[in-house]
Length: 45
Image (cartoon, rainbow, N blue to C red; front, side, top):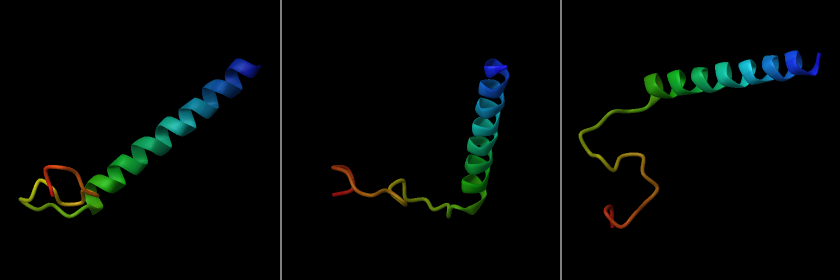
């Protein structure tokens, strides 16, 4: 019984993560700048 519950929870988490990635793929702006959306690093500075 607990294995089925763990499997269902894992499946829900995987589906939520895939949905998040798909949503993020279609909603982020695409620019030619490789640093767009970056919070900051040595390359950007």
